[in-house]
Length: 368
Length: 139
Ligand SMILES: [Zn+2]
Image (cartoon, rainbow over the protein chains, first blue to last red):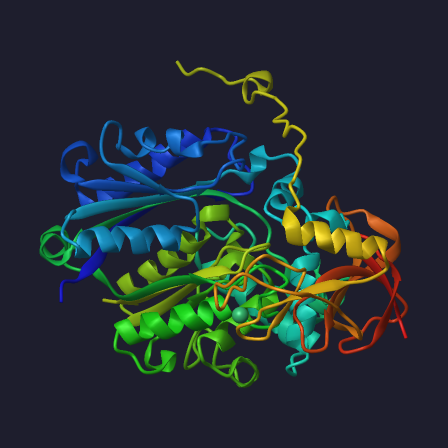
């Protein structure tokens, strides 16, 4: 079996505002850093390019047309994925594993500070007849419905607050964490509900950021670096529409993690050394930890999800500390995992979600 | 020498208008809306697996078969709910509003509804306004 590795990643931004650069300049900045790390020339050495983005976020549609040039892909094979960066990584890995490419670049970015009414863009993603028509005063109501159902499994507001505390303090060790802070449980629990059962602190903020990753085949990866980060397992999947999907669980990650772990020949996620798991809402981290097959409640309450616990989850802070870089969210978690493995840890699972109103997510199993 | 970007040159302002749309309901959607006018909730049944879907749809997502007869649904209950206290812009609402996903016993799918009364999981409700979205009252 051939293998595929991430050999380099570059990033730029991860601040609430980036007025000094346009979104394309921001992508160029991240790409320049990734290529410097890999020591490659994108105009000669890269076989294929992948950009993960959606229409409307940048105030443009047919956004694919803007994809090639900021990553060095002008007049070169560039494909676009209208989805999360993790989906792009899986497509890139397939291009390498099928032999059509030896080096593939995967890019995603976000500039929500340019969007004056982001909730209106989120509403575009809802079913126009049965969901958008509700005209909810707050788009997070979809997370509220899911969270309150999830609580019935025996989770409390204190559990959610514990996730907020953990991830915000973990973020202090990462330069990308604009929203990191040291908060007490009392601080967190004293907040008003915005959308029951979530307060402002349970909901991750948006962030501007761009990430470029360089994937390579086994042979090339070993030439480019002494520390390739192997992608041993990967998968992404979708549940159904809002009405037909399961609330209170994340079926998309149950399927994705089962298949990715099988591919990586890992029988339980606890055999891995940590998780980088979507936490754009505090409760979602727990729901997602459950969906990859673990007892999130017990692990959280026993401290096993802490940075120094048996199975650290988001030891670099996750989205609650870094913010949500829209379609680059999966790459943000992957970048945390990549740095974690470069620092000497042996393995990790990355589990991403596309956010409301979607029921799509993907998983990577990574090893150094 | 560097070019000092003044505030007025930092960004370009525009409005990206999304023009008006007409969303075609489709045959199952039409039937659903007719049902609302009659004060009924229609679901649609798959002959192959027996599942009933709401909102009614043209095909079964499991069997990939065309759906068949319409059935009137009864016994609505709250599967999950949320209460909204602040709007998207951070303003506190004068009066919090509760939204629920309403399901029907033995039926796949559900409908969003505004709730009157104390919402909670598995509480039975009465539909007080047949519209999109529905309005329901906890009984
Ligand atoms: Zn069927």
